[in-house]
Length: 324
Image (spheres, rainbow, N blue to C red):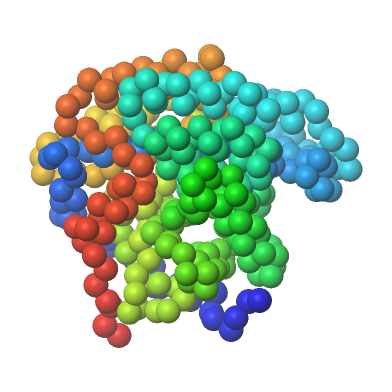
């Protein structure tokens, strides 16, 4: 049951951040940059009558903008998602494991339930599973009781599909409500679970702390920024990537910029975001493969999961209570 805790207790907007001279994260082994790959795994968690929804999915698919099919199953849409679980995800995992790179899976709980072999393979392959909620739907206007129920469902679901019973320590919605940040903190606190970080922010090239939205300034919530720009979903929106070469050029430019800054004493981290049903397609996949091969040949790059980056940051820069 939802408590009387304020769920929209936001800190003031921070336009200054770390300023002109951000802190040195002191990445392991003197790395000049940390690179985090995120695979969004949503296949089976989308809108479909098969999940009891009133309409079919219409977002992030190959045929361009469309109106959701009401009261009927959209088989072309469903099978696009199924490609991600049947082929795309395995292609991506094979690439990263070939290069011994651990990545973060933004996993939808319902998607893991639909294909538990994927859940098992991700954990046994040394990858991090972060929660991408229980369903891949829009939470923006969801009522608080329904959203809190789905957070509990996600936790229960991940515990069941994890070979070790592990619950994600990181969360990313993508389409959160104004209450999502506080609700996740609240539920984890009530259940006695570790919430290491959240990622519904795009505000920096380094992690940063904010006061915990439930208990206030005496404790902190670590935010590990995500990316919209180095993200393959831009193949499906305008303006976006018109070709795989454009995607490669963009993420390589981002890497080169941050790597140079790291050489000059200001290391940061970058996220490269892909989706199983998008970058897992053979026509797009070579762009990612080329980038992975590029950075695999650079010695002072730390390829890490978001959990590893967050734990490192906490060890270097623990939260300092804000005096009010």
